[in-house]
Each structure stands twice: as C-alpha cells, then as structure tokens.
Amino acid sequence: MKTLILIAISACTLLYAQNPVVRAMSCSDAGSTDTYACSMAVAPAAYVTGLHYWFSAATANTGAATINFNSLGAKTIKKAAGGVTTDLADNDIRAGQWVDLVYDGTNMQMQSTLGNAASGGSGSATTLYYVGPSISTCTGAALTIATYTLPANTLAVGDTVEVISNFRASAGLGIHLVKQHFGSLSVPEATYESNVTNEIRTTYSVISATSKIPDGAYYRRIQSVVTLGGRAAEFTTFFNADSETTNINASLDVKVVVPSTCASPDTYTLNYMKVTRWR
Image (cartoon, rainbow, N blue to C red; front, side):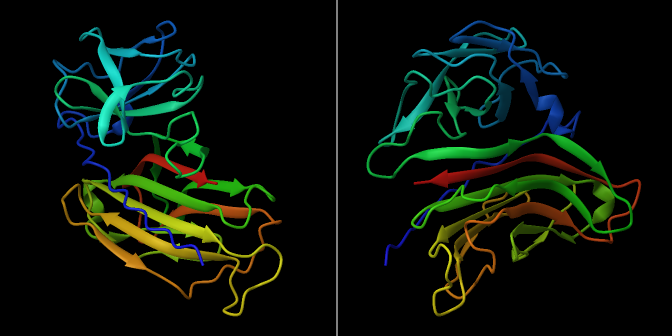
C-alpha cells in the first residue's frame, strides 16, 4: 500500500496591527504580463520580511515575473525547486489564480500551488478550489464560513487531497472550536485562539472507488497539521481508521464550520480555503 507523508506548514500569516482584516492584504492585478502590480486597501510603508501578500493575477506568466504592491517597488517572484529559490516557468501563475507570496527580504517567495504540474515524482498538483478573503458575522447558530462541493468523478484511486483552512476570529470569541469537514470526516483536533491567525492543513488519500475496503472507507485521513495563533505550535496526527461513506463517483462537500457559541457582533475572517489534488 502506498504511503504518503506530507509535511506542509506555512509561515505565520501576520496581519497589520492597524487593520486586522486580511482583505486589506490582498488586491487584484492591474499590471501587464510578467510585471504584476496592484494596490492593497491599506498601503504599507514598506515590505515586511516574513509577511504574506496575496494578489489575483489577471494574466498567466511567461517566465520570470515580478510583483509591485502599492508602488513600493517590483520584487521578483520565486518558487522553491529542490530546496533552491528559482525563477518561475511559463504558466506557474495562471490567469485568475490567487497567488500567495511571502517576502524574504529580497524576493517574493510563492507559497500557493504552481499552475504547472509538480515535478520530481511527486505527481501533478491541481488547485480544485480557492476562496478568500471573506468576513462572516456570527448569528448565534453554527455558521459555515466556507463551502465547496467536490464534483463527482473528480478523484481517482491513488489521488491525495489537501484541504487548508486559514482563519481568524474576532477578539470577543475567546477560545473557540472550528471544524473542517471533508464529507463526513471532520478535524476539530484543537481549540483555536481569537484575534490571531489559525490554520488547519489536512491530507486525505483515495483508497477505493465504488466498494468499501474492509474497514469501511473510500477516503482515509492521513495527516493533520494545525498552527495555533501563528506560533510554532504545530502538531501532526495520523489516522488509519477514518472512513467516508460517499464513494468517489458522488459529490463531496468540503466546508469550514464555526460553533453556535459565535454570536453577533463577533466575526470570523476566512483568510483563505484551498483544496488541492495530487495525481
């Protein structure tokens, strides 16, 4: 049986102290091919090393590319290849793609999935879904802050799927519980802090198509990595007995749900939710 070990822990997503709403950290590209440019709602005085920046690309890249936020100066976008940062290849950024970058003090390192297939035997990576940022006001009932329906026949046996939920609760919520659902599977392994950024990354494997294997599963949750409050407080858990009762020829809901204790005027900011398939 194929074993997948995926370690994928993002850097802390730090937000501007003067504006805790993450939508201020993103913007839509208004530049030209390979020279991306956009202006965030709150203009920073300078680029900050270690900070995440997001933009929605208007065009696909055709090789090395730069990004210029708020006219602070164009920075080269780099990707990690074999542990070394390198220039982009054609179509590493696709038109309409949300691009997640971290400033390293010199360049912008691309964190989001490349538009091209992954190399080095790791298979082809496809972003099935990406949404963010958005703000949801609590209602006093359980609240779904993101949902995606994985269409039937999207997956095949041997595929793996990673779901990332990156979110922030307003200060009034204190310690709270958020559940990330993949069909009937859920990941509530930790309680999350308010007024800081939290993240859940969970990987699933597809182990059967239309008939359950002996332990009753079509999908298996392999790994969960939780980052609490942007601190280096991650932990990894492996699961071998989780089962999903919907076969891969049927649609499957992926969602993030916050508890009924969430009441107005408190809010949840979904920085982003991303679903990626490896094949």
